Image (cartoon, rainbow, N blue to C red; front, side, top):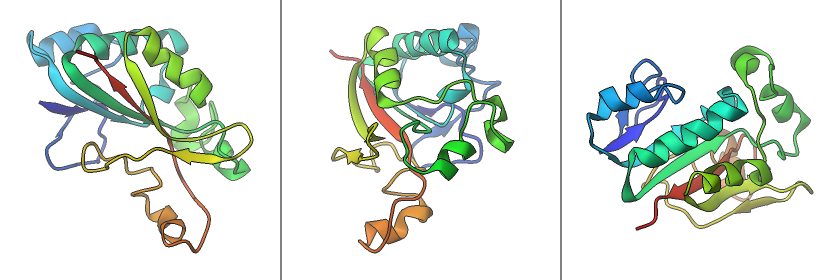
Length: 180
């Protein structure tokens, strides 16, 4: 069972999309009702965690961990607070315009990774910017759990993938594993 949390309009083959009324990261009873005692093999969550207050984010990490089978993983993406583009940071800013109006946190690798480690996950960063504006990416397969707003899939990064331009919109992306 592979579940997308906060899918919105996004759909990926093999993944069951859910919305906030079905699985609300701030309400454990929605997970209990949805899973009925079962656990997921994997979770995919793109651009949701930044909408949670810090205490909610910590509780949500623990909730996902407890709802995941041993050996399973969560692939999670949020806007990256170290992205070097001022336009990007303005677009995703806490209490920013449009969809960012209810953003509560702008994460960096240094603030996002410990959130999941504290919940018990083993964490592997996949894509991130560092404080000096350098982009880093690990070898990861988008077929395992696709993140659209990534260097691999976002249409705004096509020129970069062809070696002809700069990165546009990327995310801070992590895999968080529930070790056996």
